[in-house]
Image (cartoon, rainbow over all chains, first blue to last red; front, side):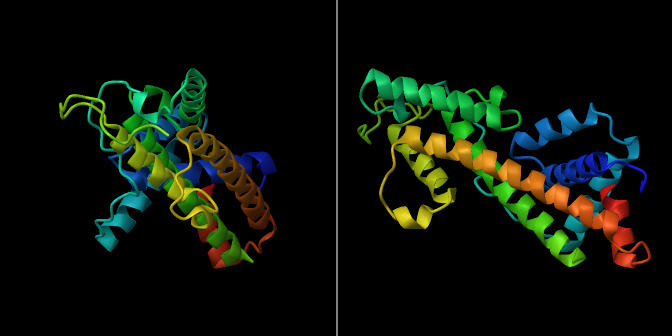
Length: 145
Length: 91
């Protein structure tokens, strides 16, 4: 592995972090499935995803924690509606619709979410995940220095 | 600002203004500098916009940290048990 380029190493680290965090999140949000699906189709060593999952599951079992993920997607199948997010006026309506579309693209699996409530829950969950991911990577970096 | 009252005639399956407005406020609380805004409600469109740019900047930060970590692992002393463990987990 020392022969791998810096870029390859960086990609390996990032994908490992993604797999671990997606696996740790478990059910209750959509983005983990989207991340795992995207990564399993790319060219990463076949055993790695399995290894990461095994390690994470072992850690979770050891901790026996029943921590709820921040925000948790309350996935009920509600009808599509942006009405509640609109302030008065066409302009505001268009703006909310536009920004909702952008937000969907930023979240893995976001385009599969059918209603605003799910999207907002997912956004909160995903932001919490990114916070945690940054925290983990920082701690590992600091431990190495 | 839109009325907080539900526009629907009571069906439990309808999304209420209040429900959405509540979620937008919760999302707003996760954004940077949220404590500076205290209880001021920011318009939904703005919260959505800031959430997008915040996610973008977090993605960048994860990217930068991954870069830094891969450099650290490259230059770390091979004989360190710690470096070896981390390397085998991540690469």
